[in-house]
Amino acid sequence: MPIRLSFPRRLADGARSRAAPISTFLTPLLQSGTLELLSPTPPGWGGNLLRGLANSVQIAIGAFGLGLAIGTAGAYAKLYGGPILRDLAEIYTTVVRAVPELVLILLLYYAGTDLVNRALEAMGYARIDINGLVAGIVVLGFVQGAYATEVLRGAILAVPQGQIEAARAYGMSPGKMLRRITLPAMLPYAIPGLANLWLIATKDTALLAVVGFNELTLVTRQAAGATKAYFTFFVAAGMLYLLLTLFSNTIIGRIERWARRGLPSVTEGAA
Amino acid sequence: MTISLADPAKPQRRPRGWLQPHRIGLMAVGLALVLSAAIFMRWDWLPNYYGLIAAGLWRTIWILVLTCAIGFMFAVPLGLAQAAGPIWLAWPAKAFCTVIRGTPLLLQLWLLYFGLGSLFPQFPWIRQSELWPYLRQAWPYGVLALTLSFAAYEGEVMRGAFAGVPRGQLEAARAFGMRRWKIFRRIWLPQAVSRALPTLAGETVLQLKATPLVATITVVDIYAVASRVRQDTYIVYEPLLLLALVYLCITGIIVFLFRRLEARIPTRLG
Image (tube, rainbow over the protein chains, first blue to last red):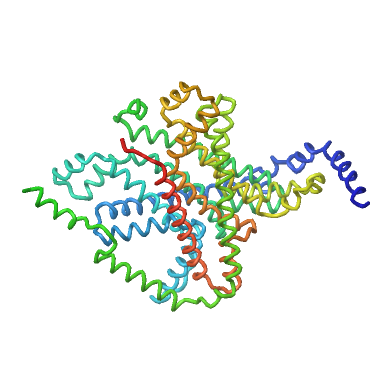
């Protein structure tokens, strides 16, 4: 009997509320004033979001740069290093690419700050508070380095062997050869992979929210939690990330055209 | 003469195999590190958490398999629409892939969980529906976010794979009088999948590495178990190291399985 009673009531309830879903969907967005919430001055949270974005971009640039440096060293170790160096580089890239970034970030964040402080104490200095920005850059850069190693290794292998041999025949020192021949010649082959890495770097900064760094995603969550307008803020942050990606894509396209100047275009080669 | 000289010199210059002197040394160092970790670090918490670890591991693998399977099913039409669809199908598919690939997964996850999760309770008809017991939990949002992400990344891969199948194959199939669906099922899809398989293996590993994000919306996977051990016992490094080892093992298994799968597909280097 109770079942038969409750069933039609639920249907009736559904019919009544179905008349209103659009307005109920929109009221949380419109009533609280989306524009006011996103305005850049203090009652709105737009300024905080933009500061978070600036932090994210800073970390991404730093991590990408550090990753490039580590990647170049790693690629050289893998290609020209001795047997031990080559194996160590292999272990580094395998382990870092197999373990989730989140786990690595936690491990390096805690272990890294702890080790630095222990070393400082052992040398007789006071403990320091490690800047979140620096820690984030180092941690993400270490992760990026493993991927960059593989990208750059492939790109260096794609450089025609004769160019490097010619440089060696001219008597260039290894450093000069790297600067003048290998790096510029491999750039067109490396740029698609490096562009991917840059986009991954911008999105991996979001993971630093988990260790409490004030980048865009964490700021968004704070703003959403304070105002209860979860949808508005997460969509707004998503748009900021998307704009960053699209902006990066146009810049990357220009850099790629510049790096490939003088080379036959890809489509012509395929056809 | 030169050949007989060069031949024995070659294996000396680039020796292969595991038992080279420096590798034995490296393995000894590695073994020493593992042993010292086992002896000097604290592992007494481990027996208390066996049940939780097994449950977390099971949930991680289950989420990985489920999201990869459903995501791939979405990826095939997404890739097909972009590679060969009319513009009113290709454009939305491309927009979907761009948006998902252009924003961090953590943000998408939190948008779905906190955003949708805060909107749903406002509708009585959702609260009274059969689905509500599931919508109140966290894991459907995690599975949804991971599925969408995998579908978008894999859709892009499948677009390239579909476009890369030689036209002659499809024309030959049409010449045999196959219908469109049969061409797709027998010729186009299998060749595209076999082309995409190496990338698919990499994407699956990336998907495994994305699963710990669901721990941030209270789904108890293996990562969340490690975090809980850290909170309960104040032991920081040991659970994280064990966690890294577990993920390494799962990655190894995925790579092995995909190698087996790839070996089954006959290939001929041109």
